Image (cartoon, rainbow, N blue to C red; front, top):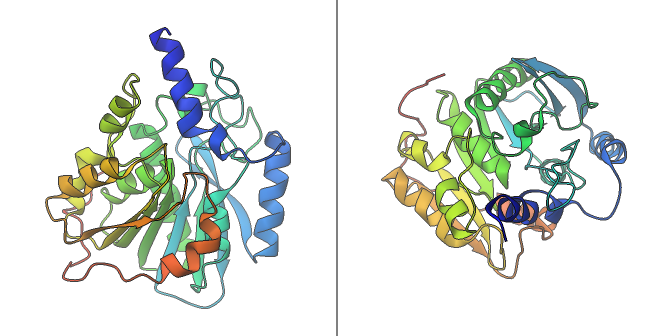
Length: 291
């Protein structure tokens, strides 16, 4: 198999269609997410953040100094093994599903660039934004602008980030550039993209940043990374490599969830997983904000 085709095939499995669920295109996926958000008490807002307009869902049940933000996965990145999708809106909005069962008083979900918004909304929504450059500096900067806006809307002073799959990579990369992050959780996240692409035998993600490269900036941050014991997309070695790169593994906890696949039923287990204690003895600070 040629290198380009192998690259597309691996990304298809790892980054899009495994999360697609059963049926529906971008419009149907948007409608499902909007219905779920409404049923769970979220209001939706579109945030102008640099070159992108990012969809967000926000639920404030009581005043809170801390806002917990869930960052969505890579979504429906590929249409076929050879063809990127024209709309990366996830057919299964896992981050939103996790947020829906979170009892915290201030909860938000932040979509990735070009998800949930109608195609053609942003000139920056070229296919590279959800394929090889989906963790680019522009994407991370846009994410942080949106996080600033969500924090202001919630009247919060600090953030907690939760990232699902590729959203975990974005949470790390964005969080490493902030000074207001209290803690971090990831679920089935590809936290060392260099190792991850090597394991799948595919080309590096040209145009994207690697979360493992900023891991030392999060050395003192309480964090917990959940890995599916049956996950064939992101395995334990990838998450362990990130934890080791922090240089302070006592602050980077890892919990394996037995028999859970990448696209398993994380939302059902999430209330229990969310109650797991974060590592102690960490001061909750990054090594300094960068932009």
